[in-house]
Image (tube, rainbow, N blue to C red):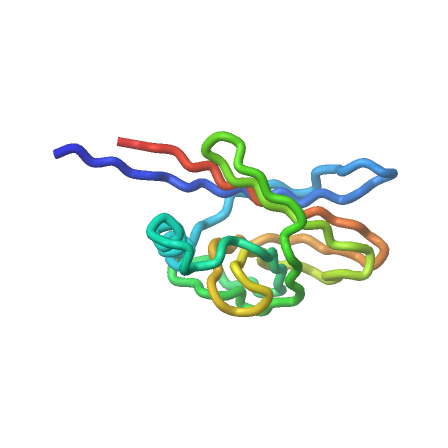
Length: 147
């Protein structure tokens, strides 16, 4: 029997603007949760499920599990500024301005609405964004086939 599998490996990158340039501060692989995997299937079947549209940060520190459906303690959510699909990848990012999302992050995730409903992925981090800093949060999702 022939079986195909699709792997989705996500990578979070957080950049801080330093003297006009983006400096990489953090890079870490993340977990696509069960609701995110279901979102992929739903989007392939129809447009009844909205596409990724927001990135959220939170202060929660509970370990990520496949059954997570929300950040543990959401701090701030912002619409995705840019998205692209080079090859078999999806890259989404947003910039948090100097007054947005300030605090210590314990988790980051992507969602398909400005509040609630479906979380695609979640990752635990240790990162502090201070007032006066501009930060870019970027997720790259690489889709690969394995047999």
